[in-house]
Each structure stands twice: as structure tokens, then as C-alpha cells.
Length: 280
Length: 299
Image 1 (tube, rainbow over the protein chains, first blue to last red):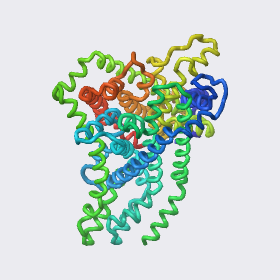
Image 2 (image 1 turned 120 degrees about the vertical axis):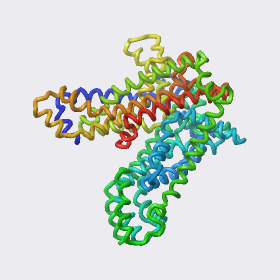
Image 3 (image 1 turned 45 degrees about the horizontal axis):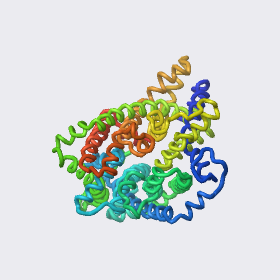
């Protein structure tokens, strides 16, 4: 079904539907737009609308050691969690089509983290570490965030894998390659773009994840969402809006990176033939 | 997609009979090794913690008491009812807006459709906490909406929406909308154009085609979206924590308070098990009857 066919079929109805769509889009964008003027506020306190515009809050946030430490903490936490999530999610995506038994079970289990309430997961991680005699810390948080991100990696690599011709791995196998060699030289290169895209997705998810962060990151090692949450609950300073703006800017940059990594689909076809030729 | 890959090894298996197979194609495909990292992560990051919640929840009042004890608290009972009908209301509003938005994505001209897509993905992708904070700035006393109401001459002393249910619902709908739009839009894309042409050429008006051809085709996607939205709303924490206020607590915020401020881990765990059983149970049942995960794989 192409959009043109839909459009011609509903010539009279579409202006109304479009108008509704634009209104809903405004509703979606409004809370984000509410943050921007506050972030550039010249006032000492949170007032709407601000009496003047300035960069004072952005510069203050940039030079604050607390926010800097939280930002670095989030970068390293999300980075580590992403590595784990990509390994586990890609493993699951590659294992699923090879499994005879248990594939359905693994698929359901792999998607379960998406429907478990994050608060319950945070409580569980906290209790589990407690039972083992430790105390919840950054490593617990990394484990939890990796668990949350792995399903997305699995879904996106599975989707990439579905576009790959299964004859390629079969050909490599019949030419005497063992599975590790087929994996490294045929399958992984063919889904490299999907893996890279899912890594960006997973990093963004872990960087922004707030519930596990809030309950598991210990005092002194707060991640950016934790500090944002604590500060937003305590005080009405435009600094929080400034940090929010920076977080939004980073999200947009990551989105751009993802489009760059996965966007140009046309290159997959020459790659595929090149690989096929190399194998023959 | 997996159906294709599941069938794939068959030809090689028949070819393999001609050739001596080392340990059989099954054993040498590496499934066992590839399966290990996700298994380890799921055991450590999901199964272990969930078992710990169940163990801690049943410690004080036994396995059966775990389910009855939370309901003895009037606070939890009220919060549970509020959560249920709030989730239902959010699902209903998200459903209506989501179908409209998905239709607009399909019917709009290319430029507008791109803008609508961009807005949807942007809001989906930007930090949940930041979006919730945006709603705090909109709703709080003397915030953006109060200012707007004043300029329009609607109300002088503010709308008083901050930390009330009428303020919380739009914010929740805002967060949940993409989960509805994406599966509905996937349904719209898979509509057979021949059906549309047939209905039109037989003289059906636009409204009739919309009601009898397009909307029924969107139903499976809308059901998949509705289940996800409802299940996620049941366990939703961040937005109610900021916008719910003390007078309108939901299940998750009650658990959060017991867990964080009160350090009543056993009580929090028992309530957590109730929430977990409700969300996971609903998801599994809905998946069985409505094939939710298949709808989502089409997205």
C-alpha cells in the first residue's frame, strides 16, 4: 500500500485527518518546547516566560563539577551496558534461527524485559545483590540496563538477519567452513550495520534510563538521570531545564548517527555480491 | 521472518546426506555457544532479580499472604483501583489519538508526513525523564499552560492541573502514543490497495470505505498497541512520581515510596509481585489470543 493510493482514496477526508495529525504533533512537541525558554532564561529562578534570555544556565551547568561527574558516569555506565547488551542481543538473534527446540521460549524470554515494570526490576536487582551479600552499585545498574537494552538489539539484529540470504551461510558451510568461521566472515559482516545501529539505540536507552539509575546508583556515583531526578524534585532552578536541553541535544545527535549508520540501504546489495564472490 | 530461516537448513540437510556430516548440521551450527551470552544475561539480570522479589515478598506472610497482604492496606487498594482506571483511560485516549495520527501519517503529503514522523520519533527517543520534566514545566503553577490561560483570558489564578489526575493523563498519553501509532501504522501499510479501489469503484463514499475497509484492517495493530500501552501504564513510575502528587498515588509510586524512602523492602516486594503478576500475566494472555508479538515484529 503506497501513500499515493491512500491519498487519492480519501481526497475529501484527508484535510481533516491531517489537521488532527498536526494538532497531535503540536501536543507531542509542546512539553519539549516548554523546556527551551527556561534553559536560556536570564532569571535566577524558574519563571515562565523568562524576563530575558541568556546563556548563563548553560555555562553554569557546563562548569559545574557535579553535572560533569554525572555526565561522565552516565557515559561509562551506558557504554559498558551497551557492550553487554550488544553481545547478548546479537547472540540471541543469531541463535534463534539455528535452534530447533526452545526458540519460542527464548524469544518470549528475550522480550520479557520490555514488559517487566522497571521499578520491579530495580527492586529485584537491589534485593538479589543484597541476598548475595553485596550492596547495589554501578555494576548492578550496568547489569540491569544491559538486560533492558538486549531485547532491542535482538529485535533489530533479527530484522537485519531476515534480509540476508540464508544461502550464503549454507554455501560457506558446504565449502568446509566451520560455524565460527561462517559467523565471523559471513554472517556478522552482513549484519554489521544492524549491530551498529542497535548499539547506538542501546546506548541512548541506557544513557536516558532513569528508574534503575535512581534506585541503584549509589551516592557519589550518580548518573545524569539520577542527578536530574534528584535536582528536579528538590529545587526549581533553570539549571535543570538547561541539562534537559543538553540531553535532548545529545538524543538528536545520536538519532542522526543512527540514521547515518543504518540509513543507506542500497550499499547492502554490492556488499552481498562481493561476499558471495569472495566465497566462490 | 524466522519462518524463512527456520525452513532454511532443510535443503542443506538433504544435501548433507550425500556428504558425510561431521557432527550433523545441528550440532555444528554454533547455536549452543551463541545462546550462552543471552542466557547468562537473562538469568543474572532478569530471572535472578525476579526470584529475589518473590522470595522477599513471601518472607513475611508466606506465598499466599504475599498476594493478600498488600490489599489489606487501604493506601495500596486505593492506588490499585486508581492505577486500573487510569491505565484504561490512558489506553482509550492513546487509542483514539494513535489511530488518528497513524492515518495522518498515511494520508498526509510527503513533506507533512515526514514532519509528523520526525516529531513522533523525536518524542519517542528523547529521555522519558526530560519529557516528564517538560510536562512539569507546562503544568506547574505559573507554568506554561497557566501563562497561556492568562493571556487568553481563560483563567486568572491558574488551572491548578499540577499533581492532579487531569494533569497526569495527558502526560501519560504523550509518553505512550508512539507505542500505539507504530503498530497501527504497520497495519495501514499492509492494507491491500485493490480492496480500496474495489470499494471505491462500487460507489462507496469515503466515510463508508474508512469505516468498512480501513478501520477494520487497523484493528489487530490497535489491539497490539492497546495491550502494550495498558500493561506499561499499569507499571508506570516516572511520570506519576512527578505529576501524580501525594493525593493521586498509583501502584508504582506506592511501591517506590516503600522501596526508597521507607526501606520497607518486604512490603515493596509483595506489592511488586502483585504488579508483576498483573503485567506479565496480562501480556502473556493477550499475546496468546491477540498474537501481540507478531504484530510488533511487523513494525
